Length: 42
Image (cartoon, rainbow, N blue to C red):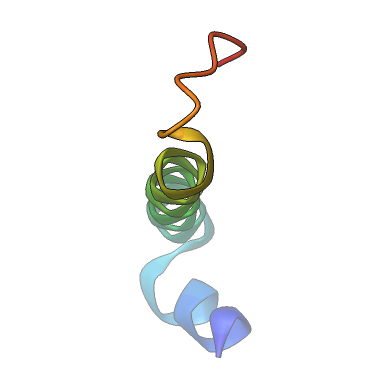
């Protein structure tokens, strides 16, 4: 599915969108797991 999206929309745009989505997911996971600890690592 990712390859199809890249072919349809263009490599640069798709990679940028994918990167944004991954960053949002990572941030949400970090908040969910480490938010209660108030870790200053991030």
